[in-house]
Image (cartoon, rainbow, N blue to C red; front, side, top):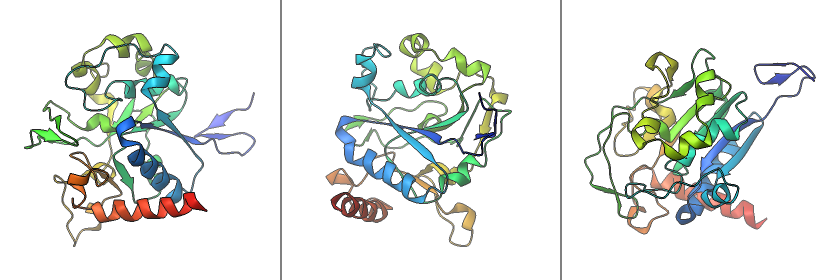
Length: 247
């Protein structure tokens, strides 16, 4: 058995950074572009795993019925990330409606082992009543915090996120990280979960330039959102992805 320090085993090989992406059958192309944008820019080994509801149900890991306020197939299954990572090391969960513009190594290097999780701590109250393809927009504390999370999967508190807990607990308990103390939640810069329509770029301040764009209200893969802010960047990435797939 080889020892491991900071994700590097004693034989010198770097373990892939596990990234779980929420998958929705209505947004397959969003998942593919998100995955492509991550892999293309990564300077470290990454292992990208879709969280697919059908597979989780088939394997008996997910059995809760879909609630009226769930806008995606991964609204709750996202919290299985530590379990799916075998409660080992750090892993990331991210919604599929993201476009990465920077090397994921930059985000991984911000990891601090004293935290159970790390995320962008948005102060966000959407004005819209609907999002994406007509789904109801809900407002709650810590909204969008759970849309991209770095999980310290081996942290004792995260071992409480068993399939049983994920299947029975309320949305409030899970999305507000109520299994943790506030001191166990670390913060990363907002540019790693840059909310289209909410966060703003200051041309004179490079620290405001997005590294990961989150099309939280709806992305260019929906006809009605084709002209949204930063939509051109996503469409360019889609075109590049399609060219690579053809070759």
